[in-house]
Image (tube, rainbow, N blue to C red):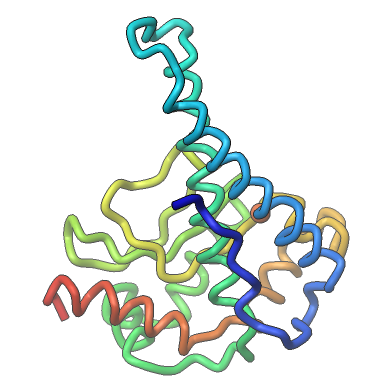
Length: 200
Ligand SMILES: [Fe+2]
């Protein structure tokens, strides 16, 4: 079954993130990652596996680019999923954040700092390795992620996510992202993973 483009999970206008930005982000960039993931998977079926080589081989390049394209799909889906709310924090995820980070404010300060420091993504993740919440970041879709960490709140800090609306002012974009957070969706993601594992 090929990967499918998922529609934006909200219809309301966002606060401080324009329709133009969203149209390009979802309609061109995210959709492009879905299409490339399918193209790569098709090409893998025909690639000469006997010619596999770490310096260069068709199968090697396809495997490398698959990790880029497919992480681009999943990270963007998680990012769009937590938008469309009004930023009102609620639910047991907030309680767990307080427990893990000392206070909500400490978590948010760390999350925002990671957002200014990263070149690609910031992820509040539930890490199944230790059963805890962490703010992880990475510079490229397929470099720096932690295996076994399940995304709960994902922030895209590539320039394409904010340059039309804010120029180089990434800080204001991060503030806008927080105002659009859908905490119900984030709580559901947290519950889904923690309940499945029976850790909470
Ligand atoms: Fe993006």
